[in-house]
Image (cartoon, rainbow, N blue to C red; front, side, top):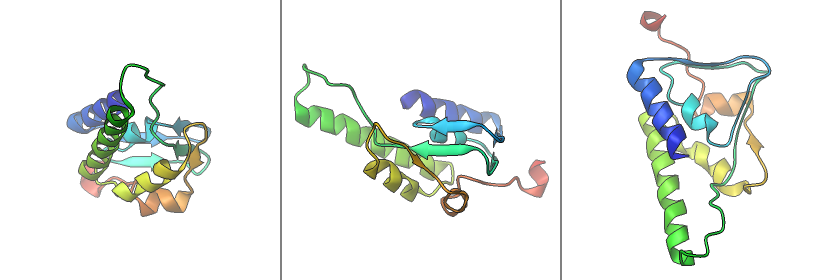
Length: 124
C-alpha cells in the first residue's frame, strides 16, 4: 500500500494524468495510484475496486500493535486521497469489504468521490 501511495504522489509531482481504458482492472491499492493523476479517466468498461487493508499474520507483534499499523495505514490512505482531491469517504467501501473480496465502484460512485476528474481546458 505504501508503494501505491508513493507512486500516486510521484504521478502528481510529475503532472501526469491517469487513464483506464475498457477492460482495465484497478483493484486493491491500485485506486490510490489512479488518484495521483492530475486528470483521471475511467472507461465505463474498466473496473476499480477496494477492500480492507490486510497484513499477514504476525506472531511477533502483539495484536494492539498490528491494529495500530492498520489504522496508521488507513490514515495515510485517507490523507493521500484528500491531497489528491478525492473524497476520503471512498474509504468507507474499503473498510467494510473483507480482504478476500473486492468492492467494485459504480461509475456514479467514481464521480461522486471525484476519483474520475476530467482535465481542465488549460491542462490538455
